[in-house]
Amino acid sequence: NDRGGTLYVVGTPIGNLEDLSPRAARVFREVALVAAEDTRVTRRLLNHLGARPRLLSFNEHNWRERLEPVFRALEEGDVALVSDAGMPGVSDPGRELVAEAAVRGVRIESVPGPSAVTTALAVSGLPADAFLFLGFLPRRRRERQERLREAATYPLTVTLFEAPHRVRATLEDIALVLGRTAIGSMPRIDPSCTRRCFVALQARRWSISRRHAASSRW
Image 1: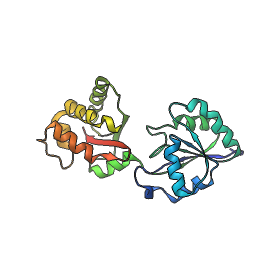
Image 2: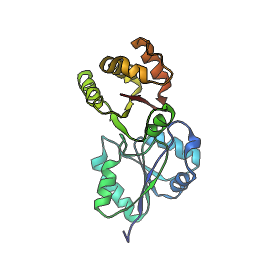
Image 3: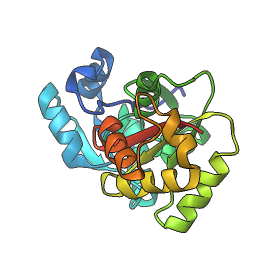
Image 4: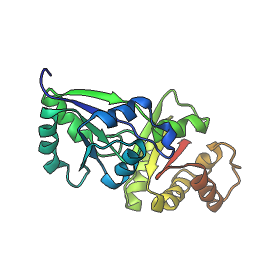
């Protein structure tokens, strides 16, 4: 790409502002535009840094109409793509913009940052040389349980995202579908725990920032 700017895919903190890298802070101060999942969330981060780029909402609801404004901005300078927390495109908005930028020959650079997936794996004590990431499970219980049954066929550590208000229901489904095998494999959890004990302990142990990541070797 001999003309135009660079699209920076920037990782942002998942709960602690000190986790933002110096490189990410510099990028935010230098770019002309930040395409953000939620401009209110990103504005707080930018204010903390004293950065004043223009903000443009870019999320699952409006990405189609926001592609062209982003590419017009890239013709004039650099643009940063961010989600509310973690790396854009990983169960978060941004994949479509990166894919289209690649097609158009735009220079793309990753500015690595925190990831709830690897954070959960690192503190789980479970095998992580290979793992299965499910993203967000379906909202409907029947579909959610079916996805869990499919995951159970792989001899891998499984990591997933869940919204705070659905954590309890999802953990109940994990216990229902996988039974004591799943409960007994969790670190420092007594296999004799009831499902209620399992849900309470897991919801507390695996809470990460605004998301909740649950890991288990199934």
